Length: 260
Image (cartoon, helix red, strand yellow):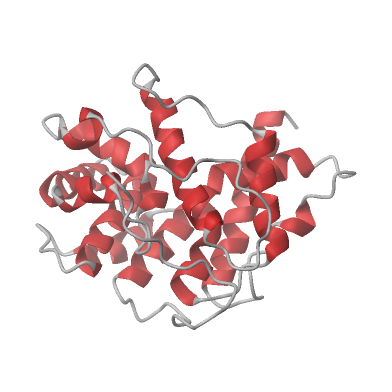
């Protein structure tokens, strides 16, 4: 198996474990047991943590399942193994997207109680540019927001969420376009943003529940798409989700509003 295929398989496996934890099956989505340095799969497991990113914390943020200190250390180790790309004004769009995703992961890591290690990524958000706020080319913008879907979680505030709050119509257009094109992974990621806006009490240009049901039927069985779908369902208060937010000394705490 090639490295790319091994990394993709590891990311799917981690997404499946996170999804099971979100549904209340099998406890926390443990990362650490898969990172034995003697295992040939350890590097792929670390890469999977970087790919899934902030969604690794999803069961703990949404349902209060404890996030163990060993798992937090594993997340930190993934940053050390795969350095964070540049995010300045001269960085490419894909590098800035990766920087935002890494920032989201770092925010949740920094607020994991019981984790005594250092945090290898600064928790100051990247610079927000026109690529976040200019929705004139809503097709391109909505694809970018789909790539930033791991930031669509209630306890992560900041410029990306602010951009989404002011752009319900472009998000709705992007969602509709993705469904018509049968691009269900993109559709579900945009549905997460609209579900978060509904959670925030913002009026939407369309009803997200029929889209949720449509994608459930036709969206395929990819673990990462299934995880995005489960998060959207949870934010919409869908009755098929399990578990509720519980108090936990080990769960990441909602961060204060991030500086713009």
